[in-house]
Image (cartoon, rainbow, N blue to C red; front, side, top):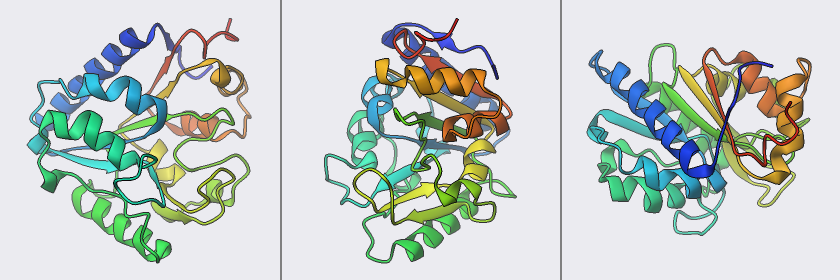
Length: 236
């Protein structure tokens, strides 16, 4: 097992994430550097983002990115950006200049991915590194839009990539790649629900697992794993 996960109810896990993010943000901002964070969508957003919105953080000294995005307009119910805006960024009063949306709805998805790479490079550290990455987990073990067996799992050069053939709809997406995700100063993996139990058991007990979530955890320097009791039910 990589690290011992925190297993609790959803409100407690939201509090633990909030406390960890506030601590890490304070450490970075104490060095007079902006805090860079990349967020997911899905159940992590709906469960945790309202709690994060209440944190007493100087949001103007943060830069917000996304770990992935579907090729949908920002107002679409499936938009990760839209979820973060409504549940976290707008309630917290994050200035628009600090928010960097993935334009995965751009017709030229590959060019848009190159542009997002430029944005991360401009605002991140040198070499490009994010301070804080939050990842949800799919029932198949995918994180961001990195799916089991996909060619992008072996991407070593690009920081951001277009996905044209995702195995779940919509097939067109944009995602941060494994080196940027796993190389963050802090990587949080949050898995909620009965359907995540098998992949989290494998990721946390099989050192050779090819699941994307396992690959991220193997390479992360300081991972934090948050599981509700359903997702942790197969762990001894």
